[in-house]
Length: 218
Ligand code: AMP
Image (tube, rainbow, N blue to C red):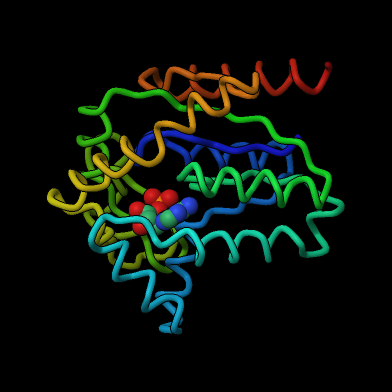
């Protein structure tokens, strides 16, 4: 069971991936996390990626594709299945991924978290993260116990620079133009399962679990 999780920024891809990874023991491959860790390290890839991310734009396909393909060739992928979170995001990335998956002989299923745009705008603008442990909070829906401090390590929470209002707007526009066509792409191949991500979290999870169970059995 190798998965792609697809949806608007703020639809819950990271949160649901964490849940799936814990429950089913998959490897979590998040391109956003990979870029952020490179930014934290201050290396050349991080510096390049930051330019695009801060502007709400996508990192160019040739950089992103190579990064993911190299990761998918690593030894652990042979024995353990994975969930791709935030990749592919363009049709060219999807084509490239199809080719890579053929070489490693891994079939995929796609979970599509469908959600209203206004809901993600609300979620993204109140999202805060701990840079130390990666935990994600929402000031409205899942605030930390102490104001602006991480429950786990007491670090000050930050707002991702791409979660600022102006950048959110660009990200949504880019998503609609570049990523939304992937819904049809995977739907046409019969690989897409649409999940109503406007619902409460336990309902979203129940739908995901049901779907994964059906696919495991069959
Ligand atoms: P995320 O954490 O998935 O929301 O990703 C944060 C940002 O990283 C995105 O807004 C893009 O700038 C960049 N990024 C992540 N994944 C990709 C991708 N597959 N293609 C291009 N850019 C990406």
